[in-house]
Image (cartoon, rainbow, N blue to C red; front, side):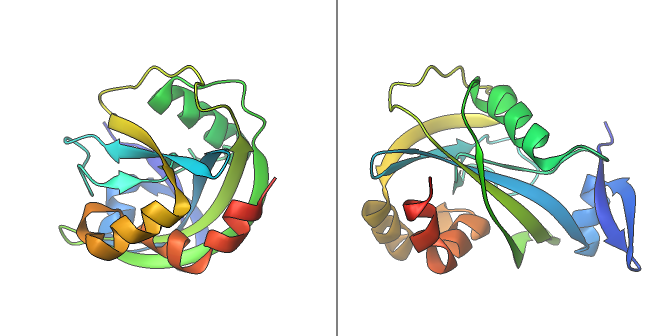
Length: 173
């Protein structure tokens, strides 16, 4: 099934096939969510059948908005679709841009709106096995240590967020 996402093609924001966008390495909008509980964040292990970065650990949610879908609506929708989580008070943090090789000839060149919410660790979840195979709460120091010890177990974007944006994420909300 073709999923159309917005991407800049020759400087024009256009609805394009998501896989084609990644094959061509086109810049495109994305969203990321960090759910925080105390000094911990919820990370997810991507499902084995994902077309890129399967089995790797990522932040709470990371995805692409549909064509003409507002980023907050996308973040809210994907929290529910991937993790069965609803009712979070998502707060916009900032927009960041990165480019990363995600393997298999695919490149993420994303302009990411990052959302953060403070929740309780016992928040109700219902994992979608097509998207997520596991989740865990982890404090940021331990996460940084695990990424340093085994970076190949984490998505490129989570490594970028931890390297370049950790301070404001942990201080947010």
